[in-house]
Each structure stands twice: as C-alpha cells, then as structure tokens.
Length: 140
Image (cartoon, rainbow, N blue to C red; front, side, top):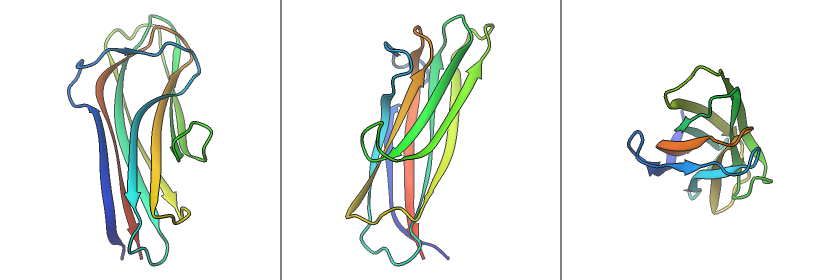
C-alpha cells in the first residue's frame, strides 16, 4: 500500500477560452505547467502520478500537437511522457487534450520537479484554456 507524500497543481487557466497564447515557433516546446514535489519521507519504490489537460484552437490544417513531460525544467531534461495527437482539417472548435503519466522510481532529491510542454507542427495554434497540470508522489 502506498503512502502519500506530496501533491501539487499548476493551474494556468481554469476556464475555457480564458487565455489566448499563440504557439509562435513550430516544433518548439512551450511550457504550460510546472510542479515541484517534496520527497521528505520517501522509503521504498517512489512513484509519481501525473495528469493534466490543455485546450488549443487549431489552424484549418492537418496539425499535430505534442505534449511532453520532463523530470526537470528544460525540454532537454529526461522525458517521462510524450504523446502526439493529430487533428483533421475540419475541426473548428477548440480541442481539449488530457493526459495521464507515471514516473516509477525517479531519482530521489529533496524536490523532484516536473515540467509540461506543448508544441505544434504548424503555426496558427493558440492555447485557449483550460490548462492544468498536477502530480502526486507516493512511496511504499
């Protein structure tokens, strides 16, 4: 049975269409969430459960949206999750993307930081909200 150690939330936008942040460079990660989990009390088998949501308005083109979560703060840090969703030409409404990820046996430091990035393979994609990223740290 796991023991709860810490939980954090990064809530950038709580409501649909509450922001308008364009993705200005194709295939370049843009930060949308970051959390730091305190590891005090870890015994054995630490694991982190991560989840989140982001909504984007797409250009009228075939577009791929990639969500990447790293252990750290930079896009070049170790990737713990990555997924790409491809959307068709006919989608006019904002698209909500949800994700769930896990990091089993992460290196134990006083705080483990996770950062969520979004990228698009085409210009014209706009982050419109909601945007949320959260994680829970447990150990045996």
